[in-house]
Image (cartoon, rainbow, N blue to C red; front, side, top):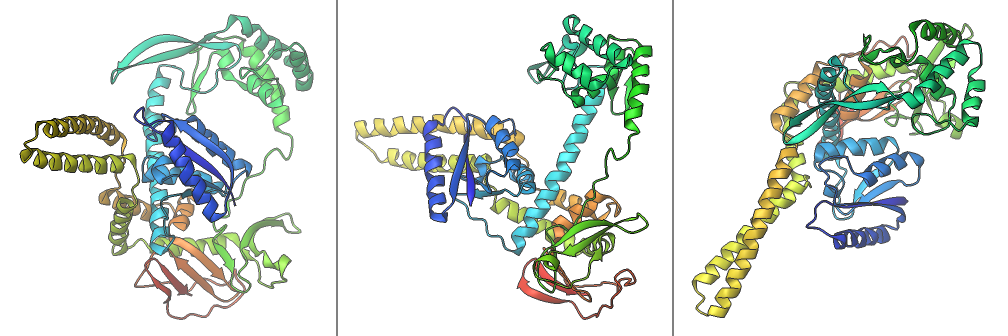
Length: 514
């Protein structure tokens, strides 16, 4: 397996020696496991309290290139500050089929671990959305005053500081768009040429031949050209969250010219086959054929009358001649989503919440836990030296003990300051928060695709499907099983019903026969 190493130290108290120590441990781990180290990502003096780490960002980006199958860290606190952050970025890597492994911490992937990890992932997503809403409120406040809200600055415009605000000891600059006189003429030329009937390609070639660059300092192409021709900022309109504010930006071109260009662009938009809707198959990697145990994958087909059908098919149909019938996507997904939702009962929610909190605490590898343990050790050392000092009568030895106690006191002060700083940003997994999250999941909109996907990710482990039977393994042990017989018309087969029975006698995993 190909792996990448991610190495990090967070403060000036640590040095390059810390990186070397981490590297040696990770290299030994790779040697024992027979992994092939492809590359390294190293962040020096960067805390894991945020994702604002250059090499960390590059690692996340590179994970989509298929260069490595796993990221190995010295221990998980090198990867992210706490469980929520850890799960958030693990999920990003997981989408690119990349695992996160610790050279010093082996996390067992038993049934309870699967459930806890999946619930924490769901909470990370939930609180990420909640944080996004708070950020959105701040951005809306900015937008109400037509301040710059982030993003690229269009060619022909630039930013100018119009106000400075002091908050929490920091000065924030508020900026607005103003005309960049040197480049505004380029925008006028583009609009005028296109309005006169010149094609995009001809205008692009003209600009690239002159060596003119886009706002991102790149050659022009069709995408960058269309963005310019459709940008309402050039007629003074500031847009945010679907709300347009006219005369909020100094205009570069007239309304008449802009809307003539939009009419011409409209002809392009009407061209057939521009974009196709993306279909999400929620049971991908979880649905398996009961006959050959191959994964079932989502496919689409068009009938003779042109109707599009989405369904799951067994991969074994091509590889081993499996005769498993295809099944309609919406049908099987509805059945599985209903099963997942039945997990969230008044009886089970408190049990899940309690175990999530216990799991999070026992697997908390954050800097805060390390600092708290360090403080305890320093206190023990100090207590031991204090007792020694009481019975020591040799002046030279007493001086040595006092000097050591002074060093420990100074280190305690630094550690306490570090703990206070870490506590400001540390996210605690609290029982009430987990209960609230699970109750919100129970109330979710059954037709919302994100909600359906979250239910499946959290509670469904695997689904094995025959033509006449389903076995579903969950990430949680559920006692009283009550499942209605499904409508079988769409399946075109008959189901046999028997009592639910545990397949594996472990917390979190059981089989359900329908």
